[in-house]
Image 1 (cartoon, rainbow, N blue to C red):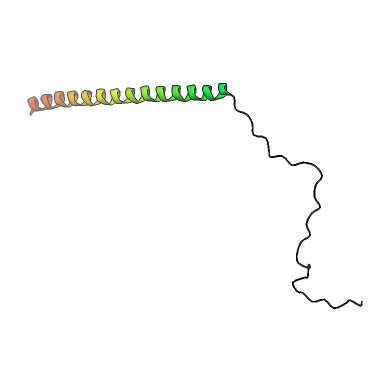
Image 2: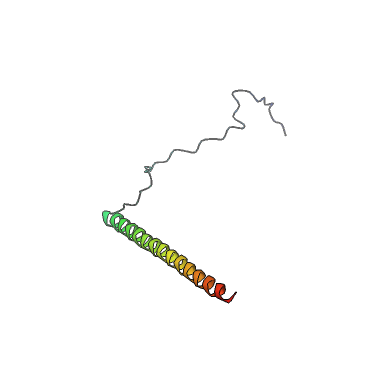
Length: 87
């Protein structure tokens, strides 16, 4: 094989990839799906309902905690009275 000598210099394109040929069809950005106002309002209504239910649940837990505390204190007082009379 008889190859001509080659020197890698600034004008050498050995390692530079060739550019693809230009396309003939137009390029458009991807379409973004439209969100209707009804979906937005439904999401807001669902979020508001969830927060209202969550707040009612939190109030119910707080009332239950107070009721259990009062019950424990009353039972402890009764237990102290009963044990105090026996001893």
